[in-house]
Image (cartoon, rainbow, N blue to C red; front, side, top):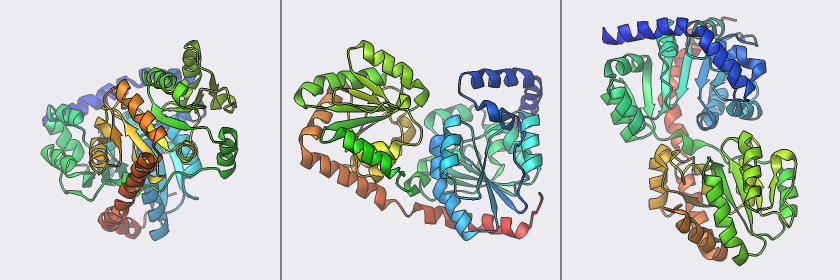
Length: 433
């Protein structure tokens, strides 16, 4: 009764909030955080026709979730070719990446905001038979309408952080009601499994972390060769997916190391590329010579720091730089995925703040596949050691690559758990178009 009342109130607030949300979307579009040409999709208005046939809907909120879903999507297309696949994401960056990386025939739309009308229009148009929700999206209107329409849902690679768990426990009846929308919850760890079960989820199991199944990031060969030619034999290191507050630390580390490592180039790939112009301006005020890829600039012999503010090129930077700092970990942002550089044989460093990837970070550190640093001085010392000691650098990189390779079988485990659901989708014969 408590959960039903809360959901009813949430829906009523959703109807009332429609004008406010539409205004918010327009402001976000003006600031580059929404796609102005596709903003209708955020309100449930599709811009493309639904294909004829049974449709499986895969949702990954942002870049990390959508990228981790790619191997699963490819397997579905290979083993269940009669199924149509729609992928939804919620960010501009993830949409751009999906445009380049989705298999042929797989469609992409933005996920609607969680307003009753927007969600209803989305489901009216697409009519999915099965929904695979990646990681941790528990939107009340989305889940309750899916359940009301008899759409089978599976939470794949389910993650429940300690913070989210503590929050949902205060509203356990509502959490249980929302989680009951899922026919199956595939938790990414035993710890996540316990948390989902505590909140009332049913049919929960752990088959491993889908992030381990991703293929190495791709690269455009001509871009790689061009930058290799521009860099020559210069030593370089990369700070990837950085957040505000980290670039200044990285610049100070560069200033400390540059006199001891002739020609050192530091590459910064910000988590949000639209910050590239601001990062460049700020670092130039500290006396550094900075070039910006987003402006079409290449690093010259005089460049100290190269700001790689482009989308979809991490595979390029990981191949250029043997030493990689995982960003979001020097400041309390929860870190980023260290498996991507691990697959490409990088020597990886992270800071103290890896809460969003704690289990992966702990496992990698314990396996000698990643170095942890606690402060700026430790970061400076670690980068200096890896720049100057090829044996240490190569050993750390080899351990990272071995760690990533050892977990690659997780996709088979997850697909095995999904076989009954995918087979039922095929047998349902939903041919709405």
